[in-house]
Image 1 (cartoon, rainbow, N blue to C red):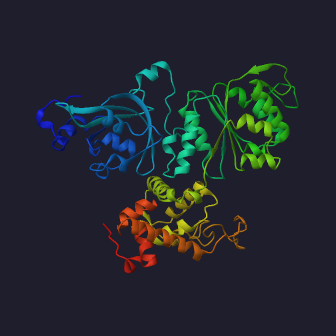
Image 2 (cartoon, rainbow, N blue to C red):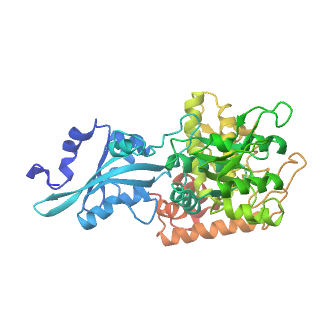
Amino acid sequence: MELPFDELTPLGPCVAFFAQLFDHLPLGVSVHDSRNNIVYYNQALSRADEMDPAEVVGRSINEVYQPFDSRGLLSQRCLETRQRFINHHLFYYTRFGKLVNSIHHVFPLIHENRLLGCICFAGEYRDPAILPELAAKGDSVPAGKKGGHYTFEQIITQNPEMKRALQVTARSADSDSSIMIYGETGSGKEMFAQAAHYCGRRAKKPFLAVSCAAIPENLLEGILFGTVKGAFTGAQDRPGLMEMADGGTLFLDEINSMPLGLQAKMLRAIQEQTVNRIGGTKERAVSLKIISATNNHPHRAVAEGQLRPDLLYRLGVVIVEIPPLRSRKDDLELLTGHFIKKFNRKLGKNVTGLSPDMIESFEKHYWPGNVRELEHVIESAMNLVSSPETVLEAFHFSSSLFSGGAMYGVGAPAVSRRQPHAPAQPRSRSTAAIDQDELDRLVKALEESGGNAARAARALNISPQLMHHKLKKYGLKKRIVVKME
């Protein structure tokens, strides 16, 4: 792509020209120099990425975005090859952990055979105006969260294991193969299931969900397979969920709670891709993607007699494991900020974050209820915020089950008489030992960064605010030379 005027080189003085062209364009636009530093970033892209342009312009692309998979970022490939990329479907993470689902068009900026940089146009994948060819073919255009529907973009993370779980789910979303999701209560299993459906080719077909633990066996069979009038007292001609979800996705939550006898009937229906209503003789063909979920490890569920091994092989073609929140503490700050923003809007508050003491308490908390518990805790605390309070303190959490880290310590909780529902898992190490490990990591990171606290914080995947608190906690400013810039 040749620049229209000689005076536009180099790119530095061109920002005003780019602003004139692209500031009000509904399509996201960013311009990068030859070293892949972002020199221009418009408001449409700012809204899609949920990042302030002031936090982006002047930074290297690698500071702002992370690739979703091994294909990398298109701008880097454009600068390396001078090739243009048209209509590339792309997932990427922002520096704050948001997963963005987009269509990219990237062009090299060349003047007199000199590569000056590249320009990127990005549209949200769900926007049919950006994808006329997909809309014409009738391909799925996943929506945002409408009517309770979740997509991959709404699953916030920077944790490597969580990113791998998302990658596995996204790559298997378009096939007919079944997916089994394993994760603790509150970890987001149904979010993953919905994201897989609304990202795949079945997105325009039904997504139906049923909790196998919440319904008695005699009712669950009828709900799944349907009934024929006269099959039993009060029975009517009604289709089951497997028929109703034909062409779409059926989500079987807590599949390990389904009675073994019913599991055998489910296995046959899945193998034959047919459904026979209770009391009926007619086989009805169905085409389904089955996504199941279990809060017990699938192989442990088989060993404990909760799950038939042959059903596991059929339903667990792809197995996705969602890590618990306590093992992805690097996501705590992102998720906390997300929920604070959510309840600021919902409750009309102006909370900016947690106090240092609460940051430390959140770090030490066991989070047995995972992300669902975190959301509940934030909502509960923000209901107690009064104007002009803008920081969540310990007293704001007095009405929630969370008690500033005292209920559940680091590692695993000791159960108090006041909290009989807490998981009875013994501590494996003392708090002193864990504190020493943390101190050793801090010192090592500071040494490797030459005493630069900001770089050390990035290396440890913690916020500058939390880094400052830990430096103060361990008295490191007095013991070693620490640069705070």
